[in-house]
Image (cartoon, rainbow, N blue to C red; front, top):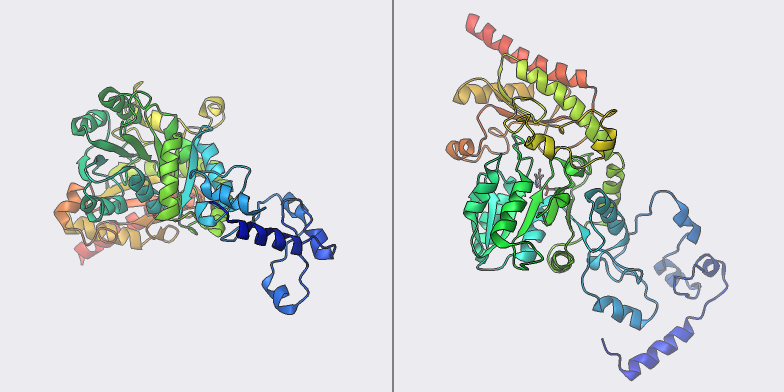
Length: 484
Ligand SMILES: *Cc1c(COP(=O)(O)O)cnc(C)c1O
């Protein structure tokens, strides 16, 4: 930005007019980093002016929530400098200019998630207004017409809808594959093309918690396309790790993985009170493109929700441990219940990816996050809070039973979403996926009798009792109906 001489003169004059005053307000504001203005004396200007607390306010342990779209500048050159900067995940010491480029509470929270994700110095984390906003921003930042991308069938419903309703119309070619289990990496490899630009994983998968072998995927991408150092056109490997959180799974630690995505609406927020999404990467190039999308198309997470997300994260470690301990007890009860056909929980030996050998995907997936190595003796290994189970019966019988089991719960709440302190249950066939033709639903692994539970941090016995009684009551009522 070039300043004309006239503009420069005008600025100098106006700066002289705004000499520091020694009024009380001005003294309170005397922190050196705030431009000095007259203390307003007219009513209208007093109304229009913002008043700030003493600079010592920043000694509050909790960070302030910085509302505000814009920031005062030292001088015009400062403004020019901030506008001129390459988009980046985090601001430097030069500060903020306009909230679409990033803002303080958002950045504080993003830095906390970057720490949990183990993001390196040149990388960053960016926060969005929802998980979907993060996912679509990440995809839009690297995909253009003529590119190809590979996704798993089990990808989150919203992501699938975005691909079908938008990405394909923008000229992006999409292939869906079965990425689960030990065969997953080869299924990915078989779909690669020269124009593949995104290799997308979602693990653990919804709702059965099947695991993708991320190490294997990173390896086949490196083998086929070369490493990122050798091939700048190598596809971006992205992982939606919402179900695991960085507590269990630090995707960026895995060689070949470029981007880690979370719907922070779920476990990271943890209290069902915000929508938010995070995208992290160690690549400065990726972060630059992502920040451009955030600045121009989507938007950074707002200050209030950034604060709530930070507040939620402060208890993530203890919440995740309890979610996992509770879920194992619930899963064990379900597995033994006569009305239950199948239970999917990574902590059960019956889970298809819990092979118990030294290539056990479950053990690997749930161990990379928190400091398990050091705490192994005192903290039992846990496997998250998501359980799916299928009630016995064919077609409509299973559908009706599952509905009644869900509606009969008195502690667990009937609601979509997951990852909160309170337990939630949903029946996809009659709720979220009721509009989808039955064959398509079944092909996607959503049986008529499948129920998904997000196990909360309530007392475990309350949850076990609640689910068991509801299942028992459905069985008893059927016996009575038969007798009658
Ligand atoms: C909920 C969810 C999303 C979408 O997140 P929103 O915050 O609802 O936009 C994406 N991926 C997974 C795995 C999810 O569970």
